[in-house]
Image (cartoon, rainbow, N blue to C red; front, side, top):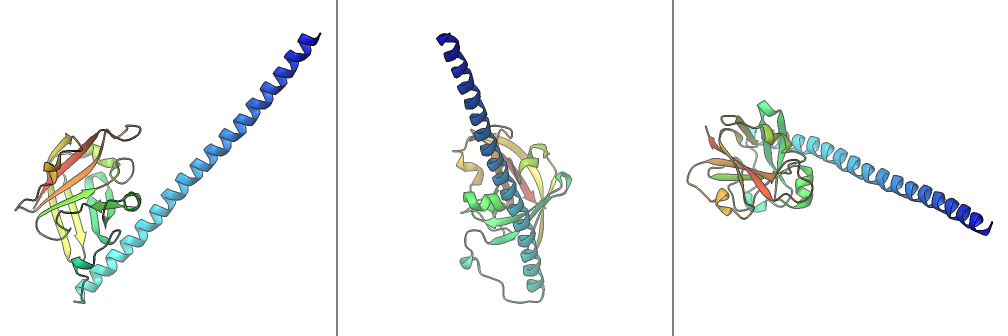
Length: 203
């Protein structure tokens, strides 16, 4: 009799624990999804605002107003916009590659030429957000860079998978080129072990 009572007590406690644990997991899941949704919504609104900022910069340049010097550029500033028509990719280019900056757009890599200037330009982006569609890019695809000073067209030369320590992919060159960098594999969970690199020449 006592054994039966104890078994029933353990059964009731087990059910209560399962319900309690289930409620906690549900709350954690709901909070996580809410955070992701709010982050994506904020990034979307930021892209719209940054795109509007770029259009104003283009208009100001067209009216021969003084443009900001490169010396005044700081992390997160809007530098331009990148488009890959075939992939329907269109995203604002920001200065820098901090975690916060790359949540809002793609980032200009320090030490490379600025978009809209001559030289080798480097741009990085997350594989699971703005640069996700790069997994479908092909040789000869067009890439457009729009800045306040005008637009430039590039054509994809090659696509490679490299080690993160391979600094040669961003080595300065005399020719005007564009290098896009994101993590690889695209569907990898966690910190990806390799880099997906695209190089294009200016047309």
